[in-house]
Image 1 (cartoon, rainbow, N blue to C red):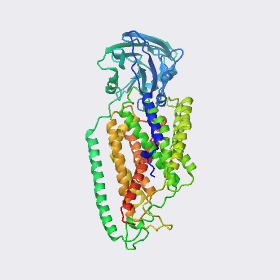
Image 2 (cartoon, one colour):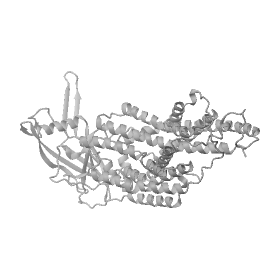
Image 3 (cartoon, rainbow, N blue to C red):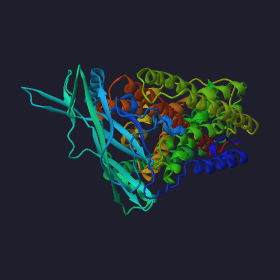
Image 4 (cartoon, rainbow, N blue to C red):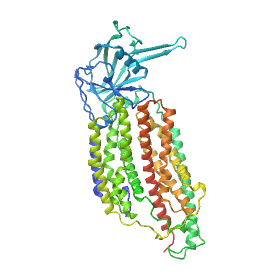
Length: 609
């Protein structure tokens, strides 16, 4: 019996189908209806440096207008993971009622608070508010650099905000904030400045915050309001659709696949014709004058070292393959639009826990087939192969966020919730999948018997060494996704909204196809040199794509972004390493199964009775 994702037991498939229905219900949303004059709550959320999207702090950490008692909004798991910390504000907004320059509060700022605001403005701090699940962005203040000699450096604080809100019927469609025709209040270095017409002296100053609200009717229905936010441009639009580059990549990949398949089939056809004409004996009779991949038919199915680790890699790779496919299809169903804060984070955690049965099943099933004895240790290794590096990386990143006071630091309740999901759902499903896989494993189904004494492997030329195969097998799949990878990085490490999920599905399919074809070709070249140690080589050949992705992440950090600082850099490189590991596991698993299917096919096609 074979071990694969499509061969999961029926009960497991039905359970996963039920979970998918529950997830669809979990991420569904309904429009909130208002009557004229109803209160529309505006939540303040977070602030942070413009160039460091993951370095965020609670809005009330700045000296701004705040209620005497702060009431926080109940957040979903995905919102907490995204760094959201929504709290009620002093802004009083009524549905379809305009307001002109209404006072919000008066603040007396100390010299320390003024310096704190100056530092935030100089670091280009922006804020995020949320109104009816619509994010509203704006800058805390204004900075102007002019002249060389003499040099002018002006810093101002926005004390008046104009809220422009669009509605359709009884629903809020869109909202933004404007400071047009508003003069910033200068924050002079030192003390005693006159601000807002009131001087306080002694290093302090008084400011008066006001706001206006304007309502505008919109033709868009509530079901299409995501389009309005997607077209809004507070952040610069860098994700132009380079259709020519995408089509160029698709054409190159198709030509590459066609070249590999045609050449390989022609070579195999000649091999089959030559070997089958000369073959007269049984499987164990060896023609001493023969060479090539046929001569190692008694060694090619010799089981590799570190069997438990190999099976764990295959199991976790199959799990991430299932998870990535599920995420992409959920995105195609419209479950991750811009109004569902952190929905993709919640979906990833839920799917990771639920697909643990896939890793346990595939790993333990194949481990049993290749005569593995320590199946309990195999299950433990499978469950911790990715979760252990993830926990270690998260611990370092979360500690730095906690030290800096960032909202990206997870609260203890969220940590316990995620840990409970792994302990109570993820790990038990891995064990259950492993037990089912062990009991349904069957035999390995090798076309040829393996001799007790291993054949000596001849010296290989330099271009057949592991490093060369890893370079070739990693670069070609990476080149297939290099264009789309920029869009993904700009979405994850920026503020873009990714919407090209159909193209992403095509690129994902092409990535897997290229990885499988390149692995088959490299495996054939390896066997032609009478080297039968293909097991780990097939995993490493295209699994090295993760190394290229990490190198690209370094390039992106240095040349395509303006990120800086300890907090942002630690999170970027820590999670980029995990991303590279995910791609290595996923592609390594795909390339191994492709190589195994190819080897079984060519040795089964020989006329050896």
